[in-house]
Image (cartoon, rainbow, N blue to C red; front, side):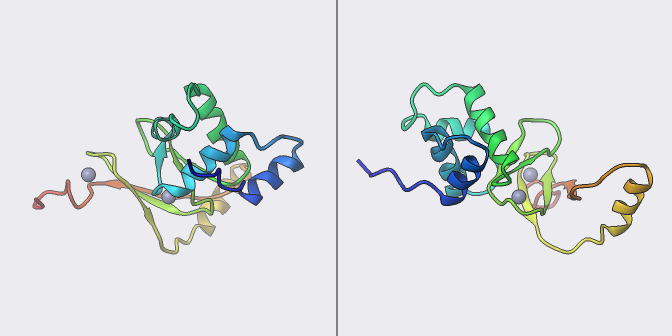
Length: 146
Ligand SMILES: [Zn+2]
Ligand SMILES: [Zn+2]
């Protein structure tokens, strides 16, 4: 048996500030999210932690992931139809999404979003972040490959 890994200090601290406890579910789910490659569904997380946290319900997993998003420790990526994906990379970044197989990858690069923000503000909207999702075909699905 491995000893439980120490609680991530940032999670413990953030929960403490809100008067909430760092429960085993929260710690294990955050650890799993960080340990995995980017972009997993709640179901994938649930499967991965099933042995460690037997009997944890899907709603608990969703609620915990949403709490991590709220705390700024993860992002929720809405990339069109299908289950929402969770991303342990918390800082704003862009994505490319394959319409055929659903593959999603990070897209690094500068986007000049000032104009868009400005337009949103003119519409009375208060922008928090701007994230770009490019949809199309991944290298494996694009015509001419494989
Ligand atoms: Zn694809
Ligand atoms: Zn990402």
